[in-house]
Image (cartoon, rainbow, N blue to C red):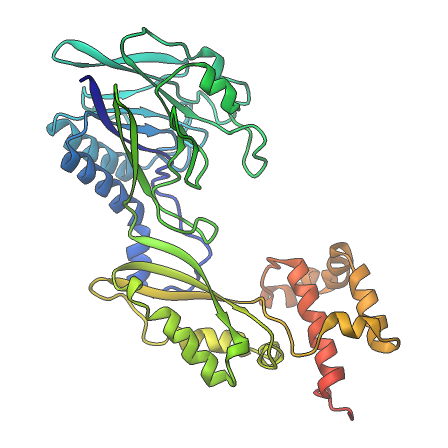
Length: 414
């Protein structure tokens, strides 16, 4: 029975900086900086272990148009390992590392094929027989906004047809609309597999033929949560088989703690420690944002002073790189609610109702105008952090004011 096996990965973004986890201990920072390299090596390890026919790298090998010699050599070494194992590799450049960028001239293995700017079909042969055609192209410049899917055509009717396309599914507005396509356009090509790239969130858009975004190989910030890696694919006359394999060893998480179940700050601290010490974090690196949910009087306690920051720093104590990895809480997010009910207060006539109505009408432009003197002040702005979530800041300001008024923490009477 005719069959081919391969790995599909995309969006390596080698040399991409980590963002969103500040003040990491040096040992942890060094570990996460090398994480994309380790994930790439794990992909090659998997290819050799599975003895696949080839590996597809569907765009954005590097993070920018400038590719450091170190990063190129890292990729070169891994492609040489594939070559030594008799495994071919097919690579395309995406919008981040377009062909007009700067790089050193290196000698790549003959078994590694880099696609150029026009869509082309390259045959994969075994013992002289063409088993598959791999179709693809590289971005000539950063911005490829026109459709390229029309340039993909079956090379024959006997072999497997595999399309590599670094682009955006039309209608997905969260990402730049590079090389846009629709599912129906891909299906109409009658290919056996579509190896997509560009979107960092893993997604299986279609089962048969498989149309797959593998996601990036290592999350670099808090929005790129969860397992990262590549797909193992087997195409045969019996049909396609695909399996996801995690290869990253640093994972971003967002976990919840219900403060309604906590009677005190000490109880809340214990609940957070339980989250951080769970067995599933016993190996690898884990960057964790703990979200406080539920309704409790503790919510208003956390609004005062530096309570939230103090709690975070307490959880970070004595957490450093260990032999098998690390667990680092990088952020505490207040998504909980105060003990009093906002909607009930809003139904009551009087001063509190007026505050809530004003708050509902308060726009982000009002906030920017109100804070402008601070952020424009030469000395004051040095001590201020950038505002990440204006809506959340307005919410917290409202809750702080109501807490002073309701719970008499502003020094007034009951």
